[in-house]
Each structure stands twice: as structure tokens, then as C-alpha cells.
Amino acid sequence: MIFDTHAHYDDEQFEADRDELLKSMAAGGIGTIVDAGSTLESWDKILELTEKYPFVYGAIGIHPDEVGTLNEDEMKRMSALLDRDKIVAVGEIGLDYYWDKENHDIQKKWLIRQLDLAREKQMPVIIHSREAAADTMDIMKAHAAGMKAVIHCYSYSAEMAREYVKMGYYIGVGGVVTFKNAKKLKTVVEEIPLERILLETDCPYLAPVPFRGKRNSSLNLPYVAEEIAELKGITSEEVIQQTERNARELYGL
Image 1 (cartoon, rainbow, N blue to C red):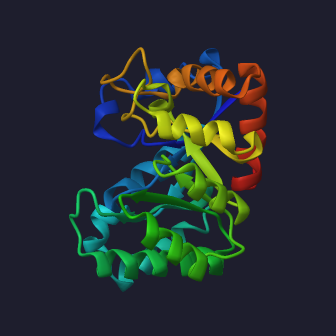
Image 2 (tube, rainbow, N blue to C red):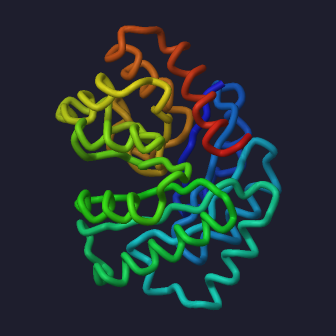
């Protein structure tokens, strides 16, 4: 069964049909989903989803665009939520210099604080990094050595991907790999071992071709698996089986 390692079913785009959609996952070949936190408001919704659906697990963290909302009280709350049974990672956390909503030093400060908390809890981390390649690598080397991590929605070079793989990290691959202009990501998939690739949607965003621009869901992951299979010269079933093993190893499931 397909394992979607990064989704946002807490998003308001799913308000109208969330229950119906999630109940259709098994029939669509989707076995497990991790719903990743991004805002303070997302945390309670994620807990609800993990309680309601046996196959949904959660990650708790604050997206770099939202770190201005973090303070010591919220860090204490995060720490308590990370002890819940179905919360399996700290995330998504990282650096985002594309939207540039938060000062870079503040982004770095809270990324390091959340990494420290993950280390303390012995939990994996889900890393968001956009147009912040060098700073993300520097912080991961200094503060996350020996930890389990996925570089989610990977958008950098194959050379840097190989470096992350050497560090023991996973590379998150989603709908973007099906885009014609995604040459860099296609090269990454060709060059790194399948044992280090995870399937993810980032839904409701980044739907693969032929649904590009529409609302994404885990049900579209077969298109991603097929593209990876084609790039690797293997079957999509091999991709699905190995990426599920990878995801279970990362999240300890």
C-alpha cells in the first residue's frame, strides 16, 4: 500500500469532503498518511484526524513562514503533544527564503529550537527548505547529525541530495517530479538510491500531471510512483513497496 509521508488534510480546502475523501483511501491503494503540522491552529486538527482515522498519523511543528507565532509556552505545548501515541515526527520545520515572511535569523533560531526538541524526544524531523539551501545544510550538519530526517518537497541539486543521503536522510518526492520542467528533480531521482526516497503529496498543493493546478490528494500518488519507476527503470509496485518500507523506518511504524 502507498504511504503518503506528508499531507495537510487539516487544510480548509478539505472542509467540504474530508471524511468522504479519507474513507476512500484504502480503495485507492493508500495505506498510511502522515499529516504534517505547519501552524499553531493545525495542531488540534491533526490530533482529531489521528484519533478519528486509524491510518492517519501526525507530525507537530511550525512552518518557517509561521515561526513568528512561536514562544516558550507554545514550545512547552509542542513538547507535550509530541508525547501522544500517534504523533510520529517534528514537522514541518525549516527555512523559507522564497516567501520571506519571517526574518532569517528568527527562522534559524526556531528551526534549531525545534531540532533540539526532536533530538530530546528522539523523534525524526520533516524539513521544509525553499531557496535556503546552504543555511539548511549548515544547520542540519551542526544540529541534526545522527538524527532521522526527510528533506520534504526536495528542490535542490543532485549533488546536495547525495550529501543528504550520506547523512542518512530521506528525500521527499511528490507531484513536481511529473512536471515536464522538473529536470533537476528527475535527475535527483535517477541518481539517489530508491532506499532513500519517500512518496509525499503536500496536498492540497502540488498535484501531479494530469491534475496539475487542481487540489491534490493522496489518491494521486500512483502517478508519482509511476514517474519514479520510469526514471529508475523498475516497476511502480517496486517503488510503492520500497518507499513504504522507507517511511515505516523513518517514522518508526
